[in-house]
Length: 460
Image (cartoon, rainbow, N blue to C red; front, side, top):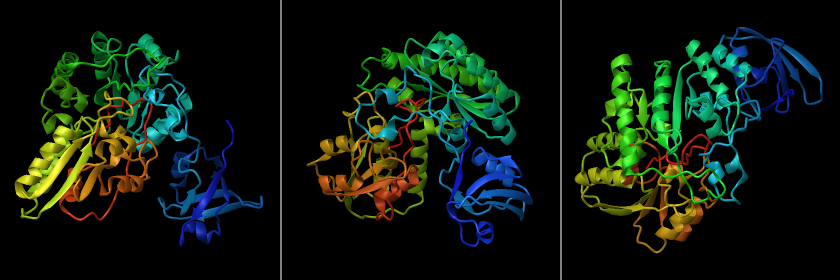
């Protein structure tokens, strides 16, 4: 393994590191004579009252520093790479991978496929286990890096090799056995592909996965997302209404069994299944505390609950304003319900909910998180949008004010000639964004990962 250089990028004022005269550009070589692999080693080794640091200065001089501190005190340094290691890319070629379904010519970072177990702990990413060594498994157990989120897809080893196009994908499932035996909490995901891992295969997978409960806290089932850029890829078909009803019947049957056995519903369907089947969303209690929100499980139910609570805490009045909320096909009817709740107390607040068709990726993609600035511009330009346009934060790239196609919020504001307000994830912020003057434009967007279906992110 290539030795990593952990270069200090910042020394915090008043910190232990500043007292030790550490500077940006210095390199952390080891702690207590132990090489540091990544941020988890760093945090683990620093949790002591006495530590010895090996530092290489910018001029090449080596310093050995003995530090006496409180047990959990940090040095007060930051590194050039927050993970203190390179991000691990995916070696699979999954038949359902959404990144493979993206058009050419987009930003290079959008094509990066992550399969890093450390990011599963830090950011909630789902990993396939195929990129995880025995060393990685042992570190997860040693440092209690939990919960770990796993993309199972199927528990049939041969089928898993086919779906991930990786001959080691079936054997990789044995790593879940090790995590289970060590009591490492897990969450699971199945991206369901019609005629591949559904029906009897799904039944087999749920039976096998149920044996991991309750260490495996939950498993979400999300329908595969299919863009219009699938030429040359495995031929997959979209699910229809009857398909969705069968999937829900299967999931609900397992929920009853698991609740009777463990007091948890365990297996959860993403919101899109209910919308596709034309069925009501489950009551809040069946989501087991919303363990799978990031997979679109219960997101719309929680949104309605939070909006109802936020509206109940306000005193209605006759304020008058007009605005537009733009969202995807999946969330639009539920956003309209939320708007209706607001208008019951504020009858002069007029809100138009604009459902944006995803022409960029194809209209089978219905979530707001994959709507581009181009589609917003083309479908809203020339329309009376009112005093402001509300957009969900998941349309924007993480930490940036730009959409997937590199159009910025500022550019879109100029094109549409109206103020854009970015709405945070929770229902309270939606209510505040409708009724109150904007005090912030939060730009939060999950990154796109290989294991996620295009339909598993659908925040208003």
